[in-house]
Every structure is written in structure tokens, then in C-alpha cells.
Length: 391
Image (cartoon, rainbow, N blue to C red; front, side):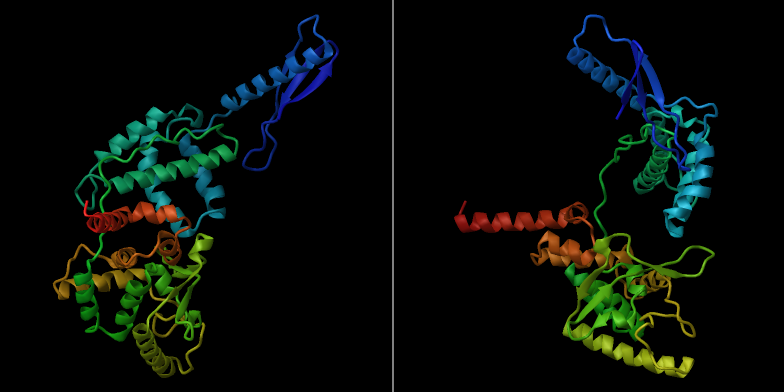
């Protein structure tokens, strides 16, 4: 809010510009105004308030002039060094760095205050024509969308730090083409996968059946400890995620959102498998570690240490299982999570319950991801109604 100070026959309007990313106060902006003659005290006050509002609006809309303008490349270097480590997980920073490698050649030379929406739109169009060195195909729209998200995140921090007055990347991205449906196994394929798992070791059988039964994420399943299981309630408390960053040891961290800390439930058949697997783990712990199995031990841990197995191990194993049994190889471990959600929806489970079991922060996220599954339910419900009314 602008302040007004009387100075003789004139008035000084002062607008506070906040603080920079280091916590130092940014120099306020000032303007001297002279009210027209002949105004009553009430009219003068109203006129000054109008001038203050107009001046503050112009200050907010106009980027601050700086003696040392900073380029996007220089700011990203600052961001990676001083800002990102304090607010993002290592795995997130590593992923963002992959996007930054694409951002810098195209936009790094622009000063932050020079960036315009057309620069971002042209950049995204260029990315869509770029051929991936790995797949030898144009970059996926998922990749382009990820680059946009990284840019928005970095520039939002620039706004917060006082380098910009608004984020020029907002609303510059629009999804191109149609979004592909999630890779989901139908009921028949799920049955074949379950049968195939019974030919595997009990460790892999338990892991993959847990994902199918509960819809938990790969890392969440890897991070499960025996103390997370409530045998009486037949429930599992999901409260951590296993993360593996290249060149670093695996670690666990709390869920990103409050909704990620949740309970899921399992059947009598799953309980029987879990108890059998626990006996196997207890025997291995005594044989290899010379101690008893503890509640703090991970269900899926590496032999000879207390660390969990990495999610990529199960990704690789699942591909082998699919190939070995002639099952659709386009499926992956995350497909089992999608399959769980789709089966819940097909059985009439409401969206709020599905969202809670999956750990989505908003039911709208569930609706957006599984819109096709809900559409099928709506179509079926409509047909039942029409058949009943003989329409």
C-alpha cells in the first residue's frame, strides 16, 4: 500500500517494493504531486488517494530498472547454487538440470526483463521438432511440458526474489495434440500377471501384488517397513518414499503432500502372502545378519544392509516377467497403480475415495488422470438408466 506524506504545498507518494532474495530491502519508488487549487480538504484527500493508487499500479506493472541487469543464464546459475538446494529435493534438482540443458542454448542469453511470451512459445515449438538422441524420435509432449514447468518454477523464484515483477512464462504453454491414455491392464491381463507372479520368488511376488492391491507408487512400496503394517486392521501406513539419485546412495523422505501420508488396505489373501514373506525375511535376517527381524526393517531391503532396494530394480524385473510370459510389454510398474485405480472406478468407488487411496491432494487430479475410466462408468450408468426407462 502506498503512503502519502505532506511536504509544504506538495505531497510525496512512496511505494514499498518489498525485499530481494537475500532479504535486503528494495529501494522504494517515489513521486511528488501537487493537488489542483481550489479543492476542499475532502476533495484533496480523495484526489491524493486516486494518485496513490495509480502510481502504485504503475510501479507494480513496470519492472524495476537495475544497474546490473541479469540474464536468464546468470540467474539459473544463482538459482542452482543458492535457491534450489534449500527448497527442492536432490532428485527434483537433478531432473530440473536435464531441462536446463535444453533451456540455456535457446533462452539463456536474454535478460530476465527482456523475456516475453513469444520467446517461450517459439522455444516450445522448437523443442517439438528436436530429435531425441536416445529414441531417435521427436521429443515427447510430456518432455516439453516438463521443460515449461521447470521454467515457470525458476521464474517464480525470480519474482519472489525481486528480479521480476511477474512471471513471463505463465500461460505460454498449451498441450499439443491429444493426451495418450494411461497404460492400463484389463481384468484378463491382470489375472495373467498375477498367475505369472506366482512363478517368481516370494519377494517379487509380494512386491508386485502389493502394488496391484493398493495402488501405491514404486518408491512408496520400496520404502515400506514392517512396522507400517497393522495386521489387525489389515492396513498399511504409507508415510515415506524411497528415492535414488544418480551417483548417490538411496534414501527415504516424507511424502510431498499431506495427502501422500495415508492408509491403504489389503485382503485376507494378501495378508497370508505378507505373513509368509515375513517368515522368509526373518529367516534371512537371522542367517545373514545374525539378528532378529525388526519393525524398522524395510520389507524389500538389500541383503547385508538396512537400506531399501531401488525402484529401478523392480522396473527391470517386471519387464523380464512380462517378456517371459508373453504379456504386453508396453506395461510397466506404474501401470499396476493405474490398473488399481481403474478397477476401483469400474467397481463404482467414488472419486474422493479413489483420490484418498492413491494419495492425490485433490479429487480433481484423479478425475483428470482417469477421466476415460470415469467416462466409461458414466456411459454404463446412462445405458442402465435408458434401458430401465425403455428410452
